[in-house]
Length: 160
Image (cartoon, rainbow, N blue to C red; front, side, top):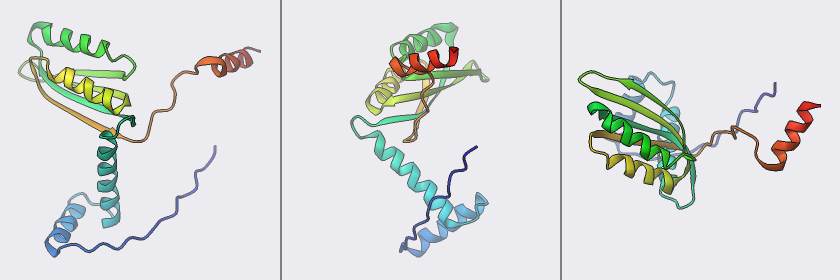
């Protein structure tokens, strides 16, 4: 097993209004984090991911979370059809029934930011969908299957 080296830390000095610093310290305390640095790093990661969402051609991984009313299967059928048009982007989905004939569905997605936003827009247009949220990261899932010649060579080598 290879152990990844700990990345070097860089120091950053930031000046903040006193009230903003007090709010940051309160958030760090509420979340029981060991330091402001950890909270600030998380906030920066979120902003970098959101910034990447808007860049043309950016490949992102993430989740789409939906809350919808499951009216006699019509909504679920429409959701399945919409997801079918984005087979390359939708890696998996998890569905659970909630109270009051509502459902929660979480899609694991990866692909160009434009396609992920198109998928969200398509899902959003389905009558009965009450909430939808895309959360992304710049880190990608590793390839699930080998493709092309490299994959064939690996299969041939493994068969010997």
